[in-house]
Every structure is written in C-alpha cells, then in structure tokens.
Length: 243
Image (cartoon, rainbow, N blue to C red; front, top):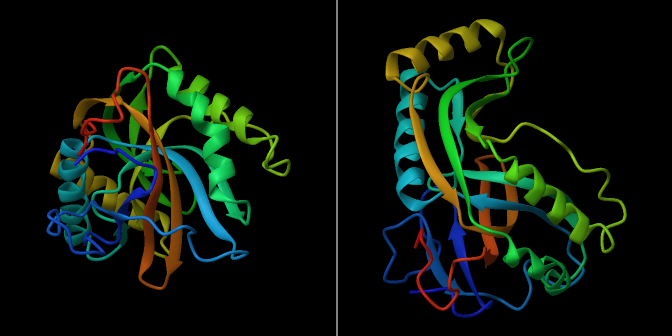
C-alpha cells in the first residue's frame, strides 16, 4: 500500500497497530485518517522528523528491547518501530494541521540524504544520564540544511517557535528512567559494549519527512504519523521505501 492520499497516516503505539489492517501484526499500520487529530481547539504535541527505514527500525527495536532486559529496567526504549531523526520540535500546537502541511510541502524538492549510523552511547556524558543515542554521520551537512529549511517554512505560522537549533543529529534508542544516576550510566555503557551496540555501524537514507504527533502517558510516549512528505526521487504514488 502506498501513500496515495494525505488522508492516510501511520499509527505507532508501543509496538502494536492501533487499527486492524492487512499489516495488523506490524508496528506501523495504515488507516483512514480523521479530519482532525484530537478535535478542534485541542492542543497537540507535534514534531517534524524522518523515520529510519523499516529494516533499520526493526533491527534497532530488537536491540533496544534486549538492552532493556539486560540492564534490569534502567531504560525505557522508544516505542517499537519508531526510531527517527528529529528535525524540529514544535511543542503543543492549536494551529490547523493542514496549514502546517501546506507550509512544509516545498520541502519535497530536497534530495534524499544518505547517512551513517553507529556507536551507541549515553547522553549526556556527565551528570545525570538521560538518553541512549546512536550517532549519525552526515558529511554533507544535509541534515542541518534540511532542519533549517523546515524551521524557516514553519516560522511564519509559528512565531514563537524560537531559533533553529544546531544540535548534533542523533537517533534516540532509549531513555533512562527517572532518578537514574551516573553509576546507572556506567552499567548501561558496559552493556552497550557487551552487546556490540557501542561499535555497531550501519547506513540508511533519509527519504521523507513526517509530521508526527506525540502523546505522553504513564506508560511512555506513543507516536502517530499525521502525514509523510517524500523527498525528491520518491514517487508518492508508489509504496514508500520503508513501507
């Protein structure tokens, strides 16, 4: 099934498809999209990102679950099959999603970007640990240019968006549970070495950007892809590379 209409979206929620489809056993499923997200006037938590390809997401989700088990519950992996590169975090928004999509549409002219992945580690390197992240190599700096363009397109609609961040690109694999200390980080770093994640390397291609809604709960975050904008070289009338 391809992305033939903006009225299709992907549901990502803790590794389970939210609606029955022919992909019901997959973490990513396609379903008819509602006209709005949580209803008119209700603020929604949004960000613009690029999902990694399906094969890489499956591999990293498996490694994340193994890491959670091996570290005795110190970590909470990201929702299964949702590994991504965040370009711009929008925060809580009431603006119509259609307006955001219209502003982002010209991003489709950007070329697809080859990236390198590898060498998972704990962030930050000092103080209380927060994340287990995978480094992303981008020799052309194309990701920074893409993120800056996304920010530029959305800024007129979202004047409080703030300045564009130049954070080093990364992929979050897991988050430390509340109250984690530096000794917990050392235990996780040791497991990263034992599991091979500390030296794991791979490659992928950024083939699209997605507007994603994040929902927070006591059980963790869940993500809903509201719309996908393929980058140049991807035909939106055909199955996406990660479908």
